[in-house]
Every structure is written in structure tokens, then in C-alpha cells.
Length: 350
Ligand code: MTE
Image 1 (tube, protein in one colour):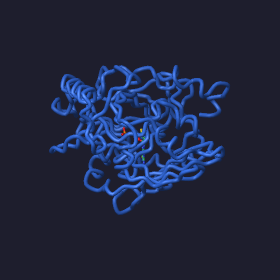
Image 2: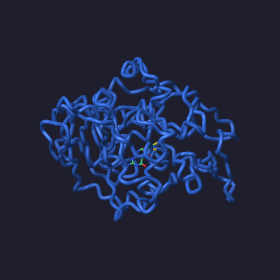
Image 3: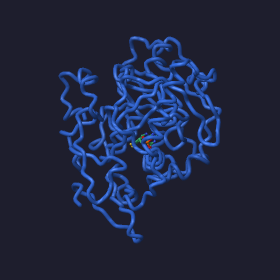
Image 4: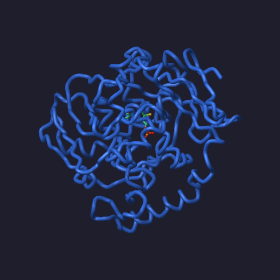
């Protein structure tokens, strides 16, 4: 199959998995592969039945409605699996079918743990320590402060937001995140008039993160948003998914989720949020400026230099007869966010 210039599929010797030569990050074309799991690769037991997921959601909603939220920042139970996080439902959720939990938590991009899709779930659960964890919030603010993650968990009511996630590599998922609008945190630190942008820095600890040995990116991983993007109601500070605390491979203990932008803007395992006057240079932009821009809004009409962005492959819909879905402008969130970019040339400001 042709995915555009520079991309090709290679069948692995076991005949079950398909390897697509990666196009994410020009510097690494030789070294990186994007592993696509085919239907025959995924045991039916791996896929969370929709009924179970819906029941779980109903339970969460009932818990939130009856005011049974835990006093400890929403952590309600500690069983054998990940601790649960209670959250109230949000009208901003999509009603689309959520991608299976096992796919969301094993098909990951978290290059600090390796560039293969399974590397983060292989290494992060054992190697990433998520307590104690501090986040410095500073720069152009009147009330700079360092928060512990447990303080942040209690800062505002947790919501469940089911969002589409569109990766720049042209795969997509639907994820039920748990968190609250980043705006809640921002208003508490009181940005000054000089704060035009927000820079997000994530953990870079070679002791915990084997991927830092690779020069795939300049570490730490850095991302940025314009202040009005950062305070937009859709921009989420996430602590969980699927009713549970974030698995390490998905960016524990807290990450950003910006659903109308390519997934790489949603930085994982945040340690610093800095308010600045000048537009930050994000990690992918620094590595390949002609391929990755600052804005990185999902845009089916602006192709990546090496592949089309017009369509996408939804995780869990792989297989011989799978159809690719058309990619939606702003990942389908145009009604809420298009006004942020009125009058801008989105072909130039990609
Ligand atoms: N954050 C950090 N720190 N490191 C990364 O490599 N990858 C990004 C983003 N956040 C990345 C990151 C990319 S490319 C995507 S598509 C999303 O995380 C994937 O999130 P998920 O693995 O939870 O689906």
C-alpha cells in the first residue's frame, strides 16, 4: 500500500504484524518504525467490551452525581488494577465509540521510553516513578508556584472528557480522559500582560527513561501553546483515562490533551509550565522545522511533506477491509476553535 513518498510497508517474518517505515521525524527515518497491529495480532480478550466500558461510565456518572467523590483528590479505590478516579461527565465529550483500553494503553508514543509503539507500555510501568512529583508553574505570572501532583489533583473538579485523538502519523483513537481545563490552573497563577505563550516541559530522567539514550529528539520534550489556546475550555490537564489514574505509558502522573491539534502537542509527564512572551520552539519543530510547526492544528487540507493528512486509520479498525476515515478540520472541533485562527494562513502557519 502506498502511504505517500518515503513510506512503505514491510511484513514481519512472523507474517502477523505489519511494519510501516516511519515518517515521523526526518532525522530518524532509518531508525524508527511504526508498528501496526493487525486483527490477527489482537486477541479478542484484549479488547474491552463496549458494554463493560459503558457500565463503567454509568457507574462513574452515578458516583459523581451522588457526591461520592473521594476526599483524596478523586482517588476512590485502590484495587489490583490502577486506582480509580471519579469524574463527572462533560457535555464536551464525543459520543463516538471509545477505542479499546488495551489499544490505548499499548499503542503509544512516548519516545523517552523508546520509539516502537510497544516500548512505553513495556518500560514505563516499571521504570517511571510518579510520586513524589512536582510541577513548577512560573515565568510571566504574578503567583509563581510549585505544585505537587496531589495538590493539582484537588485543584478543580475532575471531568470525564471523551475526545478524538489524531496523531500526525495518521492514526487516531477515541479516549475517555479524566482531568479539568488547564484554564483552572492558569487563572490561579495570574499570568501578567507579558504572557503570550505557555511552554510545557516534560520529565527527562535518564535513570528512568531508556529512550533518552537515543538522539531522536533534543531532550527534554518541550511543547507550546498560545495563551488563548491554553485557556480554551477544550484544553485539558489530564490525570486519568478510562476511569483510572493515567497509566505511566500514557503520560502519568499528568499530561496535556489538546484535541484539535496533532497528538504530539499533548505533552506527557509534565514537570514545568512556563508563561513566556515569545513563541516557544517545540521539540518536533526543532528536529524538523519543515515538517512540524508550532500550531500543528489537525488539517486535512495541509499534507505533511511526506504523506497525506486527508485520511486516518482509527485504532481497532485495522485489517484487510478496514476503511480509512476522512480526517476532519481541527479534528472535528472547528465549531469551538476555528475562531482562534480567524484571518490566519493555516497553510503557512502549520
Ligand atoms: N509526550 C512526551 N513527553 N513524549 C512523547 O514522545 N509523544 C506525543 C504525545 N506526547 C510524546 C508526548 C505523540 S507523538 C502522541 S501521538 C501522543 O503523545 C500519544 O499519546 P498516547 O500514547 O497516550 O496515545
